[in-house]
Amino acid sequence: MKRVLIVGGGIGGMTAAANLLLAGFEVEVFEQAPELGEVGAGIQLSANPMRVLRHLGLVENLQRLGVQPSAYQFKMFDSGEILQEIPLGDGYVQRHGVPYLSVHRADLLDSLIGAVRALNADTVHLNATATGFTEDAGGVILQFDDGSEARGDVLIGADGIKSRVREKILGPTPVHYTGDQSWRILVPAERLAPEQRPDTVNICVGPGKHGVVYPIRANGLVNMVGCVEYESWDDESWTARRPWAEMKADFAGWHGNIQAIIDHADKDECYRWAMNNRPPVDNWRAGRVTLLGDAAHPTLPYMAQGGAMAIEDGAVIARALQQEDDVGEALELYQRNRLERTARIVNESSANRNMFHLPSEAALREAFAQRDMNAERTAWLFSYDPMNVELR
Ligand SMILES: Cc1cc2nc3c(=O)[nH]c(=O)nc-3n(C[C@H](O)[C@H](O)[C@H](O)COP(=O)(O)OP(=O)(O)OC[C@H]3O[C@@H](n4cnc5c(N)ncnc54)[C@H](O)[C@@H]3O)c2cc1C
Image 1 (cartoon, rainbow, N blue to C red):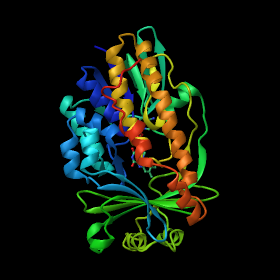
Image 2 (tube, helix red, strand yellow; image 1 turned 90 degrees about the vertical axis):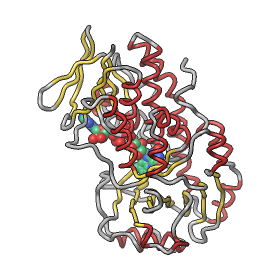
Image 3 (spheres, protein in one colour; image 1 turned 60 degrees about the vertical axis):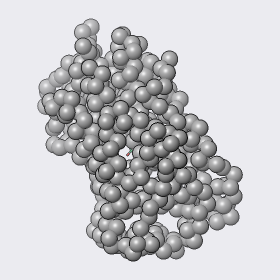
Image 4 (tube, protein in one colour; image 1 turned 180 degrees about the horizontal axis):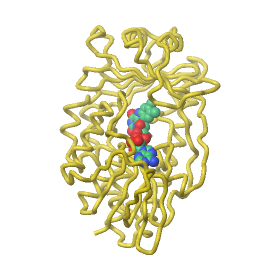
């Protein structure tokens, strides 16, 4: 049985590990951090990744830990007027067979870790920073910063936007500052009046910025991400704290529910980081080595699909390795089936930046009137089934 080495124990790496273990492969995950964990923020899970999470037996647990919002609503920044709506309630479940959930990132990662450990408790190695790899006739050798090595048949770089594995495959491909920085705060729902608590995913759009608000943790927490255009950047760390007053000023004049959420945030728990990107590439494989998730195709989060793509990748790579015995053929099959879809998501996410940040109410109203987001996303985004799509 083939032995698969995975660098990175994030959402993508752990999804790949669980799918590969379920398919009978030997798997080892190497994570640089001393413990597995996620930052305090939410993540939306649409039907496409949910089909993978169903395969892993995680839907009920995530339903219990998360929220099934009734809709995805685009709203005008100042008035809260609904510009367009994607229904996410029972009709969504009937159409797609799985719910749309909003969850705490830590709850998602913990669920994936549980799935991996239930299949093999010894899969994950912590404090293991990968520095490079070589290949010989017998396989691939992964190297670590302490001088140790691991040998396998396949190596997957699931090591995020700053991927070392990517750099070894593609050479240095500098990140590009997208022009946006992102605030994130989490607010206990009990601090808000009932009418201020969201029961939908709210995408509030306005000149030069937009705010995304939705409930997580069984409606106990409200997650807000605020994406704001800034000319320059100096920090891309997800854990960089910034003054609350700067966030308040960034959203001055926005409607009451946004103000209430910002007002009730812990003043020393406001984070802001620069959002960087890389344009899509047409190859991310070398020999027995490939990439997945943000290492392969980092994206602006403006379709809420970065984690979704990492989850899809984790399922498709396991299926490709099952389908093709030859490692090179399998990695080609995986890549061939992922390049176009992931590039489309990356490009459409970037295009959404222009639409969400249009300079006037009239321009925003007109742009949303011209598009049917529900039909668009149903047609190709939500309907994709990573567990059953034919791999060719
Ligand atoms: C504001 C914001 C909101 C978002 N909202 C959504 C959403 O609603 N829905 C959605 O689907 N996506 C969303 N995303 C995108 C999503 O968060 C990412 O795409 C996803 O986390 C990528 O997962 P990953 O496993 O590829 O990488 P990561 O989560 O970055 O994991 C990489 C792992 O590799 C480890 N690592 C790195 N280098 C090494 C090394 N050399 N050796 C060993 N380990 C290493 C890291 O420590 C880390 O644990 C959002 C992103 C942002 C910024």
